[in-house]
Length: 405
Image (tube, rainbow, N blue to C red; front, side, top):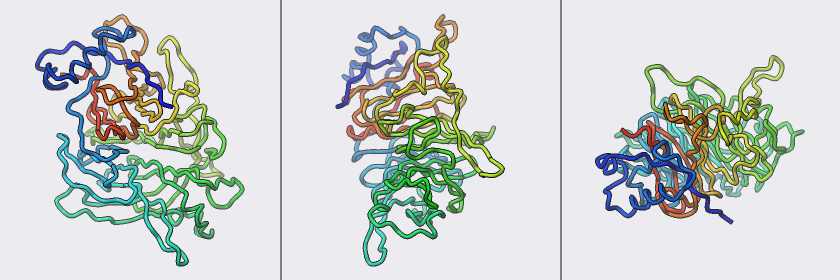
């Protein structure tokens, strides 16, 4: 059962012109709700810092499940109709039909990757299998082109000499996708077959592809069946440290990533994973143990706080100087924000006298300006957070009050 959580958000006093720009007109009932909320929460730091809604929210989607902003600076929204492509004003440019679409990202070559399903005939039987669609020209004047389709299990080199498993392979899902600075792509996968003695890789894993779509590796070092600081258990999403926009100073070249595990046994549902090279074992992934050290002089809540989440559905890492980590939880109907040190909250304003991170996570079940109903996707672009609010059929947007001009 979903629980309604109090909204931990602070409103900065805005000028009339700023209110009209960011929140709508002052006689708008939604704006009234926002200012009422600012008065009823006793835990707020008055006139300090928090997230504000950017209105209007974008409506008219059918169960939006993911959202991202590409390197082409277009907004990609996955819903029941496939991938909807919008400009920064929310005007829909086109929709590309992708069967069973669940997740979307874009690499630096402007290839758009969409997780979906495909029907494939194997020995005379039709199976509905997990697939990654690689699309060119997704937002250009030319017609979109599906240039490649990576289909399970035929996109996994460890399965080259392993027989197709029928229904067991049909149960496999691709759950998350993210690209790195060199257009390497990570695809998280879940499924029922996780035999650690098998020559083929477990279903609970992530696969690594180069820019040509060749499978070059997997989650070597991460446990697919037991929760730990190095696990890969029912991964719901994966996020790298490289994201739009392009920068003159370059992009983050870290191969680290963060995954979220949607499993009741996962004590730490969000894991920061690091990459090392072993002379004998090749590429190995391991934990970031520094996040287990809680500094209560700096924050009250932490990313690695045990059982911090109920059902994390997506994660995104801000590529700018903030390095903020955003996680949406579909069970708690909440958006969580952490620093890159694992502290929950945002930096206090200068000269505020506050020494700890100010909590800025918020949510609760409903359709109000700070509420969600099954939030399933999150991204961040130019200081704006985008949330795919699935059961409210909308894309909600928010901006930190200290970033409002």
